[in-house]
Length: 404
Image 1 (tube, rainbow, N blue to C red):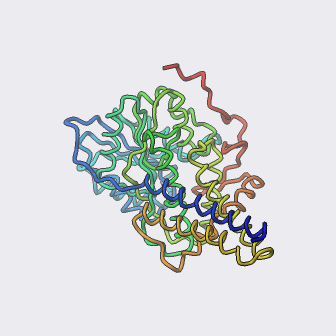
Image 2: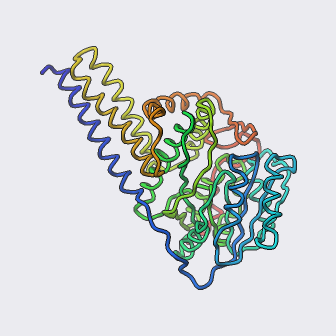
Image 3: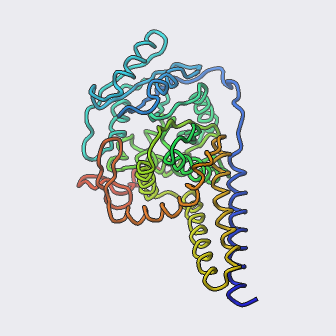
């Protein structure tokens, strides 16, 4: 065997072993957990605030799911819009009207956000001014929580005196009707969800939060100086979680998932979503979280380069790096299926093979074009994932956090 042949055989075997080990590590962190019955005699009052902008797929059902939470304590639900002209306004307004006398729900108008805030953060701040609950939760409008999820979040929050908040990992498990749906499912389930589960596995906590559904103690919000601490941030929820950690409290991820409802998006629309998520990842996420995806992307690139080089120098040895690339595609598909409980249709399996290379191209483009389109608004960005406005805060001011 020539030196070149030996190199490509060794490279393929090493990459294959790396993929197998990584798959095992990720897979063992994402097992299902049964839903327990209520575990407390008394539950604190809770306010859930849902910012809404635009008509999400399944808006009516998403609204009903939030209103129909089986929470044993007093529950107040607030829906916050920029304007009555929003297309989701009549849908949510009608659902709240139907729930009148059954649920304590209200629809609010916050107005357009200032330049230093995202629309979501502005709605959160406005809604907080009407919140009566001892605990405060925030919920994204494209999610559909299971009936017991809010209760489970509160129970996990109260069982740990050091917890400042609890949040649910998100999952997309509807039918992938388009290639865009399949790409989004692979990102959210196979990459994002499994990486978060692995990063949280040792302690159950993370140094950031996923803000699709999160419950805060008032103590945690006071400790970080309130929601306005995230002025100037594009990824305000992750930033708030970082502030909670610096304040000496924990962000606890529960093992029960929150369903995100997607539409039948085109592949082009998915690429825009992918680009936005890559920019979000530049907001200071820990290596234990983003490192997994980067390593798998690097493995995919090395396998491709090794395959091409082997074909030119020692053709039969190309089978070894090619096998590593195939294993990685299989791993992504299997992790997505295990996390979501639903496999991708066969016609969309090719997405798993091209996803790392699309990500590489989008990462380069995000360094050149610092503009993000999100929920009908355009946000110019400065360093990291911060809004490029003159008065935007750039870094976490640690002097505001009292030592614990």
